[in-house]
Length: 180
Image 1: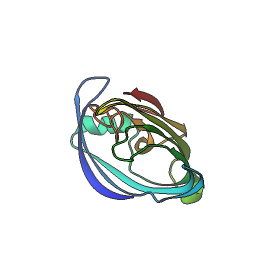
Image 2 (image 1 turned 90 degrees about the vertical axis):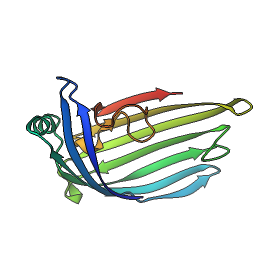
Image 3 (image 1 turned 60 degrees about the horizontal axis):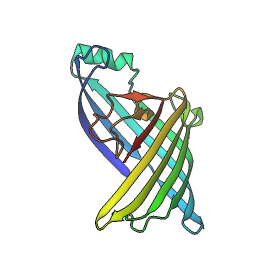
């Protein structure tokens, strides 16, 4: 996939409760190629190239971005992905499971400012409980090793992870979430 965009961020500083307002501009391309290794199991190679820039709307927001070390970065990483998908339907599953382990390495070889690795692991399971009643649950973990930049840190509220949280308000090198 390829993305390009701009987000106006409005979050509360978790230490002071004061509002933080900043803009994030980003562009990224993340090609993945998977090979079927057996049945519904796939092994793949991937790359990720991203460019992120932050601009504070006021002095307090600028201080906040400095404190959390949110710096403009261009990062390039390469890695692998292992996927197992036994769902009966990709969009609206009634049964089956989906598991994926995704690892990326960001080295100085590509001119990165930061050198680190990220590993993401996800497991989703679907159970049909009755007519049009599905129990779905998900466990997700993201782990950063090394000098993980702000853009690659685990954030609550990103993607399908625990909706209702403002992405970027709570972040860390490592995170595990469970939802049903």
